[in-house]
Length: 623
Image (tube, rainbow, N blue to C red; front, top):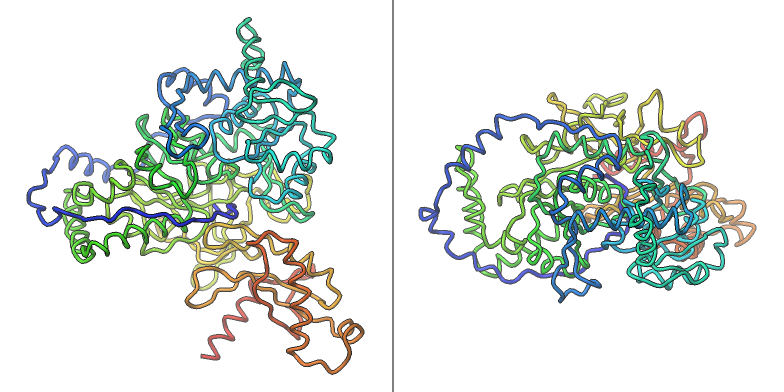
């Protein structure tokens, strides 16, 4: 699942782990009922599937069946010292219904497009469900976007309302006057009445409650067409090259159905919400999936508080990007090394693996201190959005936590493949989910080719861009642009990233065309190709521009007989100016000059994969 931008990991620390008592393995009590469950699990292939058609169907069932369960836990006002406040399904359901009623009856926003922007918080979830279950069309927006890009998203989506968190108030205030088409700016955690176009979300909920208390059921009576366009998400910036993905309820509900066959989610499970909700990965698998199963979601108040928030909320499951898992791995192992017990821990991993192979699983007892630092109950970690170091995934499994990987894109809402918990294989992104087919198009001698996907989760198309849609969907098959292969059992392995999209180590998503469009305005550049360069010893991709200089313009503007170094400096100075207009993670870090033509298709598009392969071949020959 590749569309996750600007996910930064601040420094966090685990307390020193003493790892005491591990030597006394003979004193561990073995629960033989657990052994039988492990055996049953190994014999079980998949779980029964669910068959939801809309998010509203999920909503109606869950607020009835699980009304006394806890759905959301969050610290009030994101105060990391405050206790987690608990919101039941009944409370949440009432807030969703009353907000939805307030939006359509009090603010007259029925069927309008509504932007949601802000950090993960209770009212983000309430807004999301309220819009999807009948109020209108949801447009979740990345809170990290620069102010001008937030403005562009609101304009491009033709939004009639913006629901925003208090932390985004300054940004919204700066652009209000440029957005005359927006009828209301609705502030989360505010009970302010209507003042011009401003209003507090709690006031809208209170006004909606007046209608429902009088018996008005108009909101809940709204029937949802599973095929109707109800969710718009932009996969990258907001220039003319940015793509908006159109999704419907079938797409979103199919995510829940897809996961249900591969992973058992229980009422007592608690998800840890650490990824941004504007991403389809978190808003579907991290919000809709637990809601459909009566589970709870603990909202992380900020990555710097991840350790204390886990320890206080005791989650059982976490959705993550590789960078987050890698940091947890590093921090935990640094703590263990300080205790001088690293060698013992490695020995116990071998011992417990051997015992587990014969049906005796005592990992939770042996590695109790690691579990306690993760809240004590962690059982599943799912990694997606970017490739994962196989060694780290294996370590997560070695300490007894189920490590699963997923694959998909925003265009597939997002899930296409997932490792089933009955047979996870570290290194693979899993099997195609039950509503999807995956095939490898035009494989080479190693079986590698482009990954093509046909799925119930597949988008309706790109927003206001039929040509781009036709470019990537052929006879119902979505051409992902990713390179991979399938093994004899049908497990999918991603071996190369997209021929155009650059995905950095922590899941940031960059469309080269956006940057190339800006470079094309530089007179000294004839053509350019932007890509993520792999550098030995570096995990992070280096955003690189391969440029063909426009010799005529360079001579006209800067004189003749310039050296390669002088031309490089001239173009690099121009690129640095372009970088100032880009968000930091999109900035070009390296310039390469090219003096022969790019290899192109018959439609004059650069064959990126071929050009990158040339570079790899050249590097091999130089060694």
